[in-house]
Image 1 (tube, protein in one colour):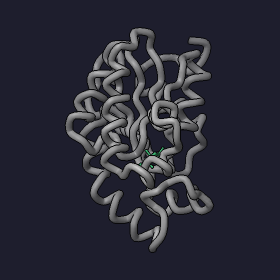
Image 2 (spheres, helix red, strand yellow):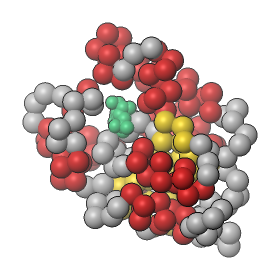
Image 3 (cartoon, rainbow, N blue to C red):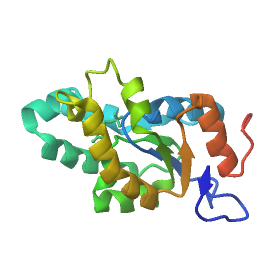
Length: 189
Ligand code: S3P
């Protein structure tokens, strides 16, 4: 785990902020989010699920019928809505969320931004049977993942306070590493 800025009370600074998971498709944001939710007894909010609820259709259908830009617009709206939340939650974001500068600022305001880092080969392995990611549909998937990750990794890195490599780890191990990075006990909180 890389911690960009050490404070005496852990990388989280304030302990009662939201935990915001960012990273590429297949990094495990939703799965690790569920682990954190269980360990901390906090609600998990998944921005893709919120977008689907708002639009009344799946992410793939939004891309297909309304286009990526419309999806990105709803993504920013959903993120803005999270600012009103007072009770600390876990937020799992879509992989493209931090790519808008406006979104990065909003994410950082929400709380501790954690980058779940993943290698391209791990993404391809984990998403081998996936059909729900429109950005990876068709063509040479490995090449697409390589291109997107090359563009996005520096952006994720710059947005995050904590960076956790996930490749060889279980979701629980990643969640525990995040809690250690925050300087808080792993269980019974
Ligand atoms: C996207 C990632 C997806 C989803 C949409 C676009 C991206 O979420 O938001 O398909 O641009 O990387 P996951 O990261 O949860 O797969």
